[in-house]
Image (cartoon, rainbow, N blue to C red; front, top):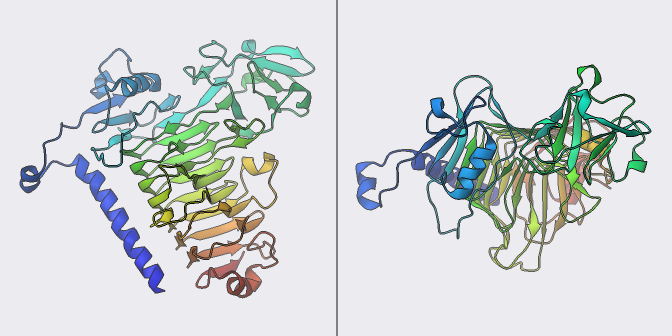
Length: 466
Protein backbone atom coordinates (compact mmCIF):
# COMPACT_ATOMS: atom_id res chain seq x y z
CA UNK A 1 0.00 0.00 0.00
CA UNK A 2 1.33 3.42 -0.91
CA UNK A 3 1.98 6.12 1.61
CA UNK A 4 -0.89 8.23 0.22
CA UNK A 5 -3.32 5.33 0.57
CA UNK A 6 -2.15 4.69 4.12
CA UNK A 7 -2.77 8.29 5.14
CA UNK A 8 -6.16 8.30 3.39
CA UNK A 9 -7.23 5.19 5.25
CA UNK A 10 -6.10 6.70 8.52
CA UNK A 11 -8.13 9.86 7.93
CA UNK A 12 -11.12 7.82 6.84
CA UNK A 13 -10.94 5.61 9.93
CA UNK A 14 -10.75 8.67 12.16
CA UNK A 15 -13.65 10.32 10.37
CA UNK A 16 -16.04 7.39 10.48
CA UNK A 17 -15.16 6.51 14.04
CA UNK A 18 -15.64 10.09 15.17
CA UNK A 19 -18.91 10.55 13.30
CA UNK A 20 -20.38 7.34 14.65
CA UNK A 21 -19.23 8.24 18.13
CA UNK A 22 -20.77 11.71 17.93
CA UNK A 23 -24.16 10.27 16.98
CA UNK A 24 -23.99 7.56 19.62
CA UNK A 25 -22.89 10.13 22.16
CA UNK A 26 -25.84 12.33 21.36
CA UNK A 27 -28.16 9.48 22.30
CA UNK A 28 -26.31 8.37 25.44
CA UNK A 29 -26.51 9.93 28.92
CA UNK A 30 -23.56 12.03 30.01
CA UNK A 31 -20.92 10.57 32.29
CA UNK A 32 -20.14 12.50 35.49
CA UNK A 33 -16.97 13.94 33.93
CA UNK A 34 -18.84 15.02 30.81
CA UNK A 35 -21.61 16.60 32.86
CA UNK A 36 -19.05 18.72 34.65
CA UNK A 37 -17.59 20.14 31.44
CA UNK A 38 -20.58 20.75 29.15
CA UNK A 39 -23.89 22.51 29.33
CA UNK A 40 -26.87 20.25 30.05
CA UNK A 41 -29.01 19.46 26.99
CA UNK A 42 -32.75 18.78 26.86
CA UNK A 43 -33.79 15.17 27.26
CA UNK A 44 -34.33 13.40 23.95
CA UNK A 45 -38.00 13.14 23.09
CA UNK A 46 -39.54 10.29 21.09
CA UNK A 47 -42.34 10.58 18.55
CA UNK A 48 -44.05 7.59 16.96
CA UNK A 49 -45.85 6.98 13.67
CA UNK A 50 -48.09 4.01 12.80
CA UNK A 51 -50.42 3.47 9.85
CA UNK A 52 -53.27 2.99 12.34
CA UNK A 53 -52.33 6.10 14.33
CA UNK A 54 -54.28 9.29 14.99
CA UNK A 55 -53.01 12.65 13.78
CA UNK A 56 -54.90 14.40 16.58
CA UNK A 57 -52.96 12.47 19.25
CA UNK A 58 -49.69 13.69 20.78
CA UNK A 59 -47.46 11.16 18.99
CA UNK A 60 -45.39 10.59 22.11
CA UNK A 61 -46.06 6.86 22.67
CA UNK A 62 -46.83 3.88 20.44
CA UNK A 63 -50.40 4.00 21.78
CA UNK A 64 -50.76 7.66 20.76
CA UNK A 65 -48.82 7.49 17.49
CA UNK A 66 -49.42 9.85 14.59
CA UNK A 67 -50.70 8.37 11.34
CA UNK A 68 -49.22 10.33 8.44
CA UNK A 69 -46.08 11.93 7.08
CA UNK A 70 -48.14 15.05 6.51
CA UNK A 71 -48.66 15.32 10.28
CA UNK A 72 -44.95 14.83 10.85
CA UNK A 73 -44.19 17.52 8.26
CA UNK A 74 -46.36 19.99 10.12
CA UNK A 75 -44.55 19.22 13.38
CA UNK A 76 -41.16 19.70 11.71
CA UNK A 77 -42.24 22.93 10.05
CA UNK A 78 -43.52 24.44 13.30
CA UNK A 79 -40.56 23.22 15.36
CA UNK A 80 -42.67 20.88 17.50
CA UNK A 81 -40.22 18.16 16.40
CA UNK A 82 -36.61 19.24 16.06
CA UNK A 83 -33.00 18.17 16.47
CA UNK A 84 -32.43 16.19 19.61
CA UNK A 85 -35.69 14.31 19.01
CA UNK A 86 -36.25 10.81 17.62
CA UNK A 87 -39.02 9.97 15.16
CA UNK A 88 -39.77 6.25 15.03
CA UNK A 89 -41.86 4.50 12.36
CA UNK A 90 -43.63 1.23 13.13
CA UNK A 91 -42.18 -1.78 11.37
CA UNK A 92 -44.45 -3.48 8.87
CA UNK A 93 -46.23 -0.21 7.98
CA UNK A 94 -46.17 1.92 4.83
CA UNK A 95 -46.25 5.70 5.08
CA UNK A 96 -47.15 7.58 1.91
CA UNK A 97 -45.57 10.90 1.02
CA UNK A 98 -42.15 12.33 1.74
CA UNK A 99 -40.21 13.85 4.61
CA UNK A 100 -39.38 17.54 4.31
CA UNK A 101 -39.68 20.84 6.22
CA UNK A 102 -36.61 20.04 8.34
CA UNK A 103 -35.21 23.44 9.38
CA UNK A 104 -31.71 24.26 8.19
CA UNK A 105 -28.96 25.07 10.65
CA UNK A 106 -27.49 28.54 10.45
CA UNK A 107 -23.84 27.47 10.24
CA UNK A 108 -21.47 24.52 10.48
CA UNK A 109 -20.56 25.74 13.97
CA UNK A 110 -23.89 24.43 15.21
CA UNK A 111 -23.60 20.80 16.38
CA UNK A 112 -26.77 19.93 18.24
CA UNK A 113 -27.82 16.37 18.97
CA UNK A 114 -29.14 14.89 15.72
CA UNK A 115 -32.71 14.50 14.63
CA UNK A 116 -33.08 10.71 14.45
CA UNK A 117 -35.38 8.87 12.02
CA UNK A 118 -35.58 5.13 12.71
CA UNK A 119 -37.91 2.17 13.22
CA UNK A 120 -39.63 0.52 16.17
CA UNK A 121 -41.47 -2.74 16.75
CA UNK A 122 -41.04 -6.05 14.91
CA UNK A 123 -41.31 -7.17 11.31
CA UNK A 124 -40.28 -5.68 7.98
CA UNK A 125 -38.70 -2.25 7.94
CA UNK A 126 -41.17 0.64 7.61
CA UNK A 127 -41.60 2.04 4.10
CA UNK A 128 -41.63 5.69 3.07
CA UNK A 129 -43.50 5.48 -0.23
CA UNK A 130 -44.12 8.15 -2.86
CA UNK A 131 -46.57 6.29 -5.11
CA UNK A 132 -49.97 7.60 -6.06
CA UNK A 133 -52.04 4.46 -6.66
CA UNK A 134 -55.13 3.65 -8.71
CA UNK A 135 -56.76 0.23 -8.82
CA UNK A 136 -60.30 1.54 -9.41
CA UNK A 137 -61.36 1.37 -13.08
CA UNK A 138 -64.06 4.02 -12.54
CA UNK A 139 -61.43 6.71 -11.94
CA UNK A 140 -59.85 6.45 -15.40
CA UNK A 141 -61.41 8.60 -18.11
CA UNK A 142 -61.13 7.61 -21.79
CA UNK A 143 -59.83 10.50 -23.90
CA UNK A 144 -59.79 8.75 -27.28
CA UNK A 145 -57.40 6.68 -29.38
CA UNK A 146 -56.55 4.24 -26.58
CA UNK A 147 -55.60 6.98 -24.13
CA UNK A 148 -56.79 7.26 -20.52
CA UNK A 149 -56.54 10.15 -18.10
CA UNK A 150 -56.36 10.37 -14.31
CA UNK A 151 -56.60 13.42 -12.04
CA UNK A 152 -53.45 13.42 -9.87
CA UNK A 153 -54.03 16.76 -8.20
CA UNK A 154 -54.02 17.07 -4.42
CA UNK A 155 -56.70 14.87 -2.80
CA UNK A 156 -58.65 14.56 -6.05
CA UNK A 157 -60.20 11.30 -4.89
CA UNK A 158 -59.03 9.54 -8.06
CA UNK A 159 -56.17 7.74 -6.35
CA UNK A 160 -54.95 6.43 -3.00
CA UNK A 161 -51.47 6.28 -1.49
CA UNK A 162 -49.64 9.62 -1.60
CA UNK A 163 -52.82 11.73 -1.42
CA UNK A 164 -51.17 14.69 0.35
CA UNK A 165 -48.88 15.52 -2.57
CA UNK A 166 -49.52 18.39 -4.96
CA UNK A 167 -46.92 17.02 -7.39
CA UNK A 168 -48.27 15.67 -10.69
CA UNK A 169 -44.95 15.02 -12.50
CA UNK A 170 -44.69 11.23 -12.86
CA UNK A 171 -41.24 9.70 -13.23
CA UNK A 172 -42.42 6.18 -14.00
CA UNK A 173 -45.39 3.90 -13.51
CA UNK A 174 -45.49 0.43 -12.01
CA UNK A 175 -48.25 -1.86 -13.23
CA UNK A 176 -48.80 -5.03 -11.22
CA UNK A 177 -45.20 -4.86 -10.04
CA UNK A 178 -43.55 -4.10 -13.40
CA UNK A 179 -41.91 -0.71 -13.98
CA UNK A 180 -42.66 1.20 -17.18
CA UNK A 181 -40.55 4.31 -17.64
CA UNK A 182 -41.51 5.53 -21.12
CA UNK A 183 -42.22 9.14 -20.16
CA UNK A 184 -43.17 11.30 -23.13
CA UNK A 185 -43.70 15.04 -23.53
CA UNK A 186 -46.87 15.18 -25.63
CA UNK A 187 -49.89 12.98 -26.24
CA UNK A 188 -48.91 12.52 -29.88
CA UNK A 189 -45.82 10.58 -28.71
CA UNK A 190 -47.84 7.95 -26.83
CA UNK A 191 -47.41 4.99 -29.18
CA UNK A 192 -46.96 1.86 -27.04
CA UNK A 193 -48.89 0.52 -24.09
CA UNK A 194 -47.90 2.26 -20.84
CA UNK A 195 -46.30 5.24 -22.58
CA UNK A 196 -47.42 8.25 -20.52
CA UNK A 197 -47.28 12.03 -20.35
CA UNK A 198 -47.51 14.01 -17.12
CA UNK A 199 -46.00 17.46 -17.62
CA UNK A 200 -49.44 18.85 -16.83
CA UNK A 201 -52.57 17.48 -15.19
CA UNK A 202 -54.31 15.23 -16.05
CA UNK A 203 -51.92 12.32 -16.25
CA UNK A 204 -52.46 10.48 -19.57
CA UNK A 205 -51.38 6.92 -20.39
CA UNK A 206 -51.85 4.60 -23.36
CA UNK A 207 -53.50 1.24 -22.75
CA UNK A 208 -55.54 -1.10 -24.94
CA UNK A 209 -58.08 -1.27 -22.15
CA UNK A 210 -58.87 0.52 -18.92
CA UNK A 211 -55.54 0.58 -17.01
CA UNK A 212 -57.08 -0.75 -13.78
CA UNK A 213 -59.35 -3.36 -15.39
CA UNK A 214 -59.15 -6.88 -13.93
CA UNK A 215 -57.84 -5.46 -10.64
CA UNK A 216 -54.64 -4.05 -12.11
CA UNK A 217 -52.78 -1.83 -9.67
CA UNK A 218 -51.20 1.23 -11.29
CA UNK A 219 -48.63 3.03 -9.13
CA UNK A 220 -47.27 6.41 -10.21
CA UNK A 221 -44.02 7.78 -8.74
CA UNK A 222 -44.27 11.57 -8.52
CA UNK A 223 -41.34 13.99 -8.57
CA UNK A 224 -40.50 14.49 -4.91
CA UNK A 225 -37.39 13.58 -2.93
CA UNK A 226 -38.48 10.95 -0.40
CA UNK A 227 -36.24 12.54 2.24
CA UNK A 228 -35.09 16.14 1.82
CA UNK A 229 -32.33 15.94 4.41
CA UNK A 230 -30.61 18.69 6.36
CA UNK A 231 -27.64 18.98 8.71
CA UNK A 232 -27.66 17.24 12.05
CA UNK A 233 -29.59 14.10 11.15
CA UNK A 234 -29.21 10.36 11.66
CA UNK A 235 -31.48 8.23 9.45
CA UNK A 236 -31.54 4.43 9.59
CA UNK A 237 -33.71 1.33 9.41
CA UNK A 238 -36.15 2.59 6.75
CA UNK A 239 -37.08 1.63 3.20
CA UNK A 240 -37.60 4.43 0.68
CA UNK A 241 -39.60 3.39 -2.36
CA UNK A 242 -41.40 4.89 -5.32
CA UNK A 243 -40.17 8.46 -5.67
CA UNK A 244 -39.93 10.24 -9.02
CA UNK A 245 -37.00 12.45 -7.91
CA UNK A 246 -34.18 11.39 -5.51
CA UNK A 247 -34.31 8.97 -2.61
CA UNK A 248 -32.29 11.19 -0.27
CA UNK A 249 -31.02 14.60 -1.31
CA UNK A 250 -29.04 17.22 0.57
CA UNK A 251 -29.78 20.88 -0.19
CA UNK A 252 -27.66 23.25 -2.23
CA UNK A 253 -24.96 24.79 -0.09
CA UNK A 254 -24.27 21.53 1.69
CA UNK A 255 -25.00 19.78 4.95
CA UNK A 256 -22.85 18.80 7.90
CA UNK A 257 -23.09 15.98 10.40
CA UNK A 258 -25.37 13.66 8.43
CA UNK A 259 -25.41 9.89 9.00
CA UNK A 260 -27.37 7.59 6.67
CA UNK A 261 -27.22 3.90 7.58
CA UNK A 262 -29.07 0.63 6.97
CA UNK A 263 -31.46 2.14 4.43
CA UNK A 264 -33.10 0.33 1.52
CA UNK A 265 -33.74 2.71 -1.38
CA UNK A 266 -35.45 1.38 -4.48
CA UNK A 267 -37.59 2.37 -7.49
CA UNK A 268 -36.43 5.96 -7.81
CA UNK A 269 -36.39 8.79 -10.34
CA UNK A 270 -37.44 9.56 -13.89
CA UNK A 271 -39.13 12.89 -13.16
CA UNK A 272 -38.47 16.07 -15.11
CA UNK A 273 -35.33 17.85 -13.95
CA UNK A 274 -36.18 21.10 -12.24
CA UNK A 275 -35.49 24.00 -14.59
CA UNK A 276 -34.52 21.73 -17.49
CA UNK A 277 -37.62 20.90 -19.55
CA UNK A 278 -37.32 17.54 -21.28
CA UNK A 279 -34.46 16.31 -19.08
CA UNK A 280 -34.97 13.54 -16.48
CA UNK A 281 -33.18 12.70 -13.26
CA UNK A 282 -33.26 10.55 -10.14
CA UNK A 283 -30.51 9.31 -7.81
CA UNK A 284 -30.55 7.09 -4.75
CA UNK A 285 -28.47 9.34 -2.48
CA UNK A 286 -27.21 12.71 -3.71
CA UNK A 287 -24.76 14.77 -1.63
CA UNK A 288 -24.56 18.35 -2.85
CA UNK A 289 -21.51 20.59 -2.84
CA UNK A 290 -20.62 22.18 0.49
CA UNK A 291 -21.23 18.98 2.46
CA UNK A 292 -19.00 17.99 5.38
CA UNK A 293 -19.06 15.20 7.93
CA UNK A 294 -21.34 12.86 5.95
CA UNK A 295 -21.29 9.10 6.42
CA UNK A 296 -23.37 6.76 4.23
CA UNK A 297 -22.97 3.14 5.29
CA UNK A 298 -24.64 -0.25 4.96
CA UNK A 299 -27.33 1.06 2.62
CA UNK A 300 -28.80 -0.83 -0.34
CA UNK A 301 -29.81 1.12 -3.46
CA UNK A 302 -31.47 -0.37 -6.55
CA UNK A 303 -33.55 0.50 -9.60
CA UNK A 304 -32.65 4.20 -9.89
CA UNK A 305 -33.12 6.11 -13.12
CA UNK A 306 -29.62 7.47 -12.74
CA UNK A 307 -27.00 6.64 -10.10
CA UNK A 308 -27.05 4.94 -6.71
CA UNK A 309 -24.60 7.31 -4.95
CA UNK A 310 -23.30 10.69 -6.04
CA UNK A 311 -21.53 13.89 -5.02
CA UNK A 312 -22.24 16.75 -7.40
CA UNK A 313 -22.71 20.46 -7.84
CA UNK A 314 -21.23 23.78 -8.95
CA UNK A 315 -19.17 25.97 -6.65
CA UNK A 316 -20.82 28.91 -4.93
CA UNK A 317 -19.25 31.64 -2.79
CA UNK A 318 -20.05 29.61 0.34
CA UNK A 319 -19.71 26.05 -0.99
CA UNK A 320 -16.25 25.26 -2.39
CA UNK A 321 -16.31 21.46 -2.27
CA UNK A 322 -16.85 18.39 -0.10
CA UNK A 323 -15.05 17.49 3.11
CA UNK A 324 -15.16 14.19 5.02
CA UNK A 325 -17.86 12.56 2.89
CA UNK A 326 -17.63 8.77 3.04
CA UNK A 327 -19.67 6.01 1.37
CA UNK A 328 -18.78 2.72 3.06
CA UNK A 329 -20.10 -0.85 3.02
CA UNK A 330 -23.09 -0.15 0.76
CA UNK A 331 -24.59 -2.18 -2.09
CA UNK A 332 -25.81 -0.92 -5.46
CA UNK A 333 -27.75 -3.21 -7.81
CA UNK A 334 -29.52 -2.55 -11.12
CA UNK A 335 -28.91 1.19 -11.28
CA UNK A 336 -27.79 2.93 -14.46
CA UNK A 337 -24.60 3.93 -12.65
CA UNK A 338 -23.18 3.00 -9.25
CA UNK A 339 -21.08 6.03 -8.24
CA UNK A 340 -21.00 9.43 -9.93
CA UNK A 341 -18.97 12.57 -9.34
CA UNK A 342 -19.17 15.93 -11.08
CA UNK A 343 -17.98 19.33 -9.97
CA UNK A 344 -17.55 22.72 -11.56
CA UNK A 345 -15.89 25.95 -10.52
CA UNK A 346 -12.71 27.96 -10.79
CA UNK A 347 -11.50 28.04 -7.16
CA UNK A 348 -8.93 25.24 -6.96
CA UNK A 349 -7.18 26.59 -3.89
CA UNK A 350 -6.61 24.75 -0.59
CA UNK A 351 -9.83 23.30 0.79
CA UNK A 352 -11.66 23.29 -2.52
CA UNK A 353 -12.92 20.19 -4.30
CA UNK A 354 -12.83 16.89 -2.44
CA UNK A 355 -11.01 16.73 0.89
CA UNK A 356 -10.81 13.43 2.80
CA UNK A 357 -13.65 11.88 0.77
CA UNK A 358 -13.98 8.17 0.01
CA UNK A 359 -16.04 5.47 -1.69
CA UNK A 360 -14.79 2.28 -0.06
CA UNK A 361 -15.72 -1.34 0.62
CA UNK A 362 -18.94 -1.19 -1.40
CA UNK A 363 -20.40 -3.92 -3.63
CA UNK A 364 -21.86 -2.72 -6.92
CA UNK A 365 -23.57 -5.05 -9.40
CA UNK A 366 -25.23 -4.94 -12.81
CA UNK A 367 -24.75 -1.29 -13.74
CA UNK A 368 -27.16 -0.51 -16.56
CA UNK A 369 -29.39 -3.44 -15.63
CA UNK A 370 -32.33 -1.43 -14.30
CA UNK A 371 -35.34 0.27 -15.81
CA UNK A 372 -33.62 3.65 -16.17
CA UNK A 373 -30.98 2.47 -18.62
CA UNK A 374 -33.66 1.10 -20.91
CA UNK A 375 -35.46 4.42 -21.33
CA UNK A 376 -32.89 7.21 -20.96
CA UNK A 377 -32.15 8.96 -24.27
CA UNK A 378 -28.44 9.68 -23.57
CA UNK A 379 -27.30 6.18 -22.72
CA UNK A 380 -24.12 5.89 -24.81
CA UNK A 381 -21.44 4.81 -22.35
CA UNK A 382 -23.63 5.76 -19.38
CA UNK A 383 -24.47 2.21 -18.22
CA UNK A 384 -21.34 2.13 -16.10
CA UNK A 385 -20.20 1.65 -12.54
CA UNK A 386 -18.15 4.85 -12.33
CA UNK A 387 -19.39 8.03 -13.99
CA UNK A 388 -17.23 11.16 -13.99
CA UNK A 389 -18.69 14.17 -15.79
CA UNK A 390 -17.06 17.55 -15.34
CA UNK A 391 -14.18 17.26 -12.88
CA UNK A 392 -13.08 20.87 -12.63
CA UNK A 393 -12.28 20.81 -8.90
CA UNK A 394 -9.48 18.81 -7.22
CA UNK A 395 -10.63 15.21 -6.89
CA UNK A 396 -8.30 13.13 -4.67
CA UNK A 397 -11.16 10.75 -3.84
CA UNK A 398 -10.25 7.36 -2.37
CA UNK A 399 -12.14 4.73 -4.40
CA UNK A 400 -10.79 1.44 -3.07
CA UNK A 401 -11.70 -1.92 -1.62
CA UNK A 402 -14.88 -2.10 -3.71
CA UNK A 403 -16.28 -4.95 -5.78
CA UNK A 404 -17.73 -3.99 -9.17
CA UNK A 405 -19.60 -6.82 -10.91
CA UNK A 406 -20.92 -6.62 -14.47
CA UNK A 407 -21.71 -3.46 -16.37
CA UNK A 408 -23.84 -3.29 -19.47
CA UNK A 409 -21.50 -0.93 -21.36
CA UNK A 410 -18.23 -0.19 -19.53
CA UNK A 411 -16.64 -0.11 -16.09
CA UNK A 412 -15.80 3.63 -16.04
CA UNK A 413 -16.77 6.75 -17.98
CA UNK A 414 -14.51 9.82 -17.87
CA UNK A 415 -15.83 12.70 -19.93
CA UNK A 416 -12.72 14.86 -19.52
CA UNK A 417 -10.01 12.32 -18.79
CA UNK A 418 -8.87 10.74 -15.53
CA UNK A 419 -7.90 13.27 -12.85
CA UNK A 420 -4.28 12.51 -11.91
CA UNK A 421 -5.04 12.93 -8.22
CA UNK A 422 -7.86 10.34 -8.22
CA UNK A 423 -7.05 7.43 -5.86
CA UNK A 424 -8.67 4.60 -7.81
CA UNK A 425 -7.07 1.32 -6.76
CA UNK A 426 -7.33 -2.00 -4.90
CA UNK A 427 -10.78 -2.86 -6.26
CA UNK A 428 -12.17 -6.13 -7.60
CA UNK A 429 -13.57 -5.74 -11.12
CA UNK A 430 -15.59 -8.57 -12.68
CA UNK A 431 -16.79 -7.97 -16.24
CA UNK A 432 -17.82 -9.89 -19.32
CA UNK A 433 -14.77 -10.56 -21.52
CA UNK A 434 -15.82 -8.01 -24.15
CA UNK A 435 -16.86 -5.16 -21.83
CA UNK A 436 -14.49 -2.17 -22.06
CA UNK A 437 -12.84 -1.01 -18.87
CA UNK A 438 -13.14 2.63 -19.95
CA UNK A 439 -15.61 4.18 -22.35
CA UNK A 440 -13.95 4.99 -25.67
CA UNK A 441 -10.90 2.81 -24.97
CA UNK A 442 -10.21 -0.68 -26.35
CA UNK A 443 -9.06 -2.29 -23.08
CA UNK A 444 -10.89 -5.23 -21.46
CA UNK A 445 -10.10 -7.42 -18.46
CA UNK A 446 -7.80 -9.46 -20.72
CA UNK A 447 -5.70 -6.33 -21.35
CA UNK A 448 -6.18 -4.77 -17.92
CA UNK A 449 -2.42 -4.46 -17.33
CA UNK A 450 -2.10 -2.29 -20.43
CA UNK A 451 -5.00 -0.10 -19.30
CA UNK A 452 -3.71 0.39 -15.76
CA UNK A 453 -0.29 1.33 -17.13
CA UNK A 454 -1.78 3.83 -19.59
CA UNK A 455 -4.41 5.26 -17.23
CA UNK A 456 -2.36 5.30 -14.04
CA UNK A 457 -5.17 3.82 -11.93
CA UNK A 458 -6.21 0.38 -10.60
CA UNK A 459 -2.59 -0.86 -10.55
CA UNK A 460 -3.24 -3.07 -7.52
CA UNK A 461 -6.76 -4.09 -8.45
CA UNK A 462 -8.00 -7.56 -9.39
CA UNK A 463 -9.66 -8.10 -12.77
CA UNK A 464 -11.77 -11.15 -13.56
CA UNK A 465 -13.70 -12.20 -16.67
CA UNK A 466 -17.16 -13.50 -15.92
